Length: 501
Image 1 (cartoon, rainbow, N blue to C red):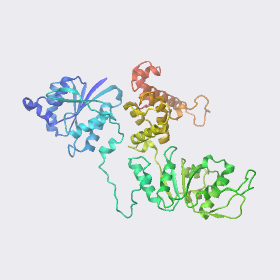
Image 2: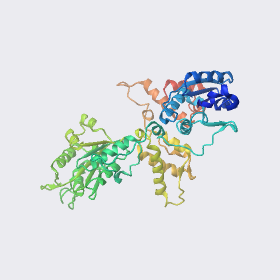
Image 3: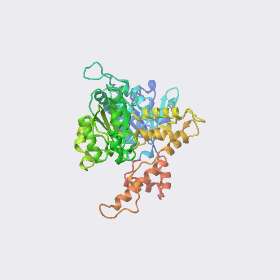
């Protein structure tokens, strides 16, 4: 295990070679004297004429390998530039073998902004020991009295504060109807701004997004922000309606229209009159139903099954699908004319993995919901997350998006006997992500694109990734889990199959 120190070169360090009697040896040299490091990477914003002699002086008094990394900043408190420089340096240190390195970040040299960035990185993205030094107390591990788990930190440091702009006639005012959509990411902010704009327009809306991204929640917010807010919002899962009942469910029927039609019944269109009709999983509608839906939207009227007289309806359509309808059109499964009738305003809900900065908020919000739901149950204990469990959740890809996150926290709260959900509780609550490597591998048809090397690679990547996760990144333990002859054999396999560690 390589022990590596990273630090910014401070002014006191530079003065040490010539003014040692007054300032001492400086924080960096003091740390190298007190602790054993294999390497020290020193970031310097100073001119090479100043950092060069210092590096020479430092190398002469320590066995630690010293490397100076020149990083020019526009100012010593530019958080974004400091953050980017620090990340570059750590990435360079970790290289291809991140689990073979023990990192230490020195907080004392440099500016407070530099120390703040080291703390944030050491508590989140790059777990590291934080050290500090002084003439009076020597070198010691820094006592940072809190855990930072904020996946939005890189964006916070990189970007300037963005203020909400109001007062423009072209920009709708802030509305509370979208407050339930928890977010801080720019991609979601843009989406909600567009949803606000279209909400007040009486045009159809098509919401696209993966399962679990919150399409119905967005549709309800659009309805609440519209001029139809006091009228019905009717949600229909098109995929749950049997094909032979679609027409009756959407448009209603008259008594005697078919065998079981003992009374007349209005359909979803009439129920949503003057309000909003939310057609979820629109891509599941069979072809004949698509034709009748198109006519109802075009003419603004429906005809009940068994009736001859049309009924006028005033309905705003918000449709949603987890399919890409343009691909469905190409495949002949969705009508092009219906698509263009509905796709006046298209909103694409991003998956959770693309919502940088939102995951931490959603974890807190979802856990609070889990606690509220369970509050009245026998033996209820309000749950909180350990730092390890939180970091595990922050690193999960969430293919099931927000719905998967909420259900995972529900399971974790049940599995946890204590009030704090541990890392193991969270890990057991996670469902295995679907993937090619988990599919049947023994009975696939030969020929027609079958590739044995690719299949074996999928299987190897699957089990190697699982082993590294279960061993918490410890390669020796992971090697034992997969039956590798040695640590080096496992390392070779990880590199061969390009498994991220």
